[in-house]
Image (cartoon, rainbow, N blue to C red; front, top):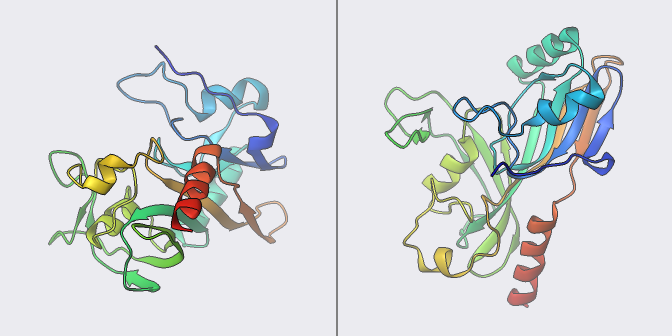
Length: 233
């Protein structure tokens, strides 16, 4: 059965003649699935109302939050150049397992995408590419934390792999987490990878002015935080 998704006006965080920023729902594909082309994805939902769209960057299927989309080929090229020059700044928030001793830390471990038989991004691989993620604890809930992650590079699963390498995988991340962890398996506070693209900053191609867009938490992420805050009190 193909899941149903809708993108309503509340999920469009910003739009002009050249671009859109949406609050992508968790579970929705950014681009078509090569094995299951009939599954809903961003363009299949938006193009009937918006016209032709160009995907500038991706979010994992289970990741929610701010996603930047071009409405013209010219804008697509301009935004791609901003990504290549690292002028686009993305901030994520995640619920992680454990209570790290640090408040802030930068992980600079190299990554190799699709580096094992499970198609995971492998940390510390001898031929991995340089990767950097800044982490900051926002709230602590005993066995869990809310962390802010700011990657300065943009590799597939970078934040998930770096957090897992630190010993604090994201809640719900069965690919990079420990399925045998008793806390992980006994407290299903959210039924997906608890990762949210919280903010995206870029230079608007039309005005040239810097722009910062914030994506509110979706219901499941907000509910998980509410439960954790109540239980920790």
